[in-house]
Image (cartoon, rainbow, N blue to C red; front, side, top):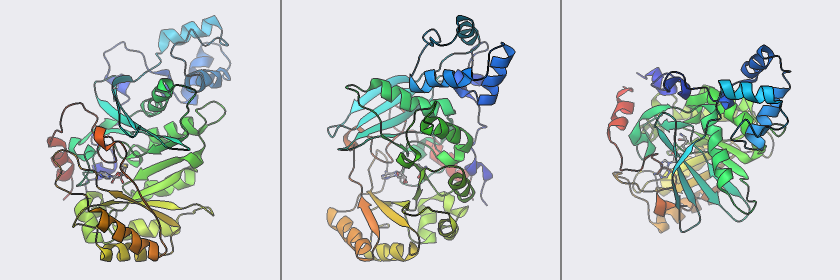
Length: 380
Ligand code: SAH
């Protein structure tokens, strides 16, 4: 039996300021338009001010109400009396030999999360987290070891973009966002969607085009359908095995949404012309890396506008899996290529600072083992 908690956080989603000591003010960036409008009306200010406030927060990246110079002093004071502008604390910043930068951020309640900045020739990608920890217990993933701590609020998701932007020099700007950090974005659907709205809106938000945003999921079918109906962002699905039994061994979520259900869902999604679903496939030595696996994968994806991102396993302390040899990675790649599958082998970025895919743990010390067992205990 599948414990429904796997689709939702194990703990109830709690806005983090409710966890703060009595008297702490709420973070203004977590208010919806309705809530902010309510506040403005109550204080006799027109509601169009809401969008101006958002422009200050998300476009001009204001950190105080005082600097919001097109608002009256009255309003600035009222805002300051009732709200704070939440920030993330940079606990650690590590730069890899290849230019990848990993940020460890502290949250107001003491939890921590990681984001990874990946510079490439023509783009600057930021990989962000949507949960502290993760409940899904994928066998090969370092974040899984933590178990789920909690969902992030939309402002905590957005603040990763704002804090990293602030740290950039020489006019460099983030061009792409991938929701591939810690956690399962579709298990924190509401806050993730709100954050995506802020990240992609060009009138008052950060203004990164949805075409440049990609969300990666373990394959929560109903939420995938909802996401594709409600947004224009790109979808990536973690597949990792071409058959149901093996996928179930690697990804406990497969017992809730089987491989067949995920594939059926992909066939029926309204994918616009020229768009493709990305399938992620972590390559594990002796587990899912044979030429037969590659042939089965090509067959499975037939008829779906797709591309495959092969991620050779990135080792992390305590993991039992191994990365395949370069020859066997190349053989896997060739089979897919010959079968007409668009394939890209991801070279590890930032592996010397534990910033590569699946290495994020959101803590400075070594791994804690208890969380994984909790995640697995909720499935039977
Ligand atoms: N929960 C989402 C978002 C995480 S994205 C998801 O699972 O899709 C991170 C990607 O890296 C996923 O495809 C994940 O399976 C993969 N990954 C996890 N651990 C890894 C590791 N050690 N080496 C390589 N890829 C890994």
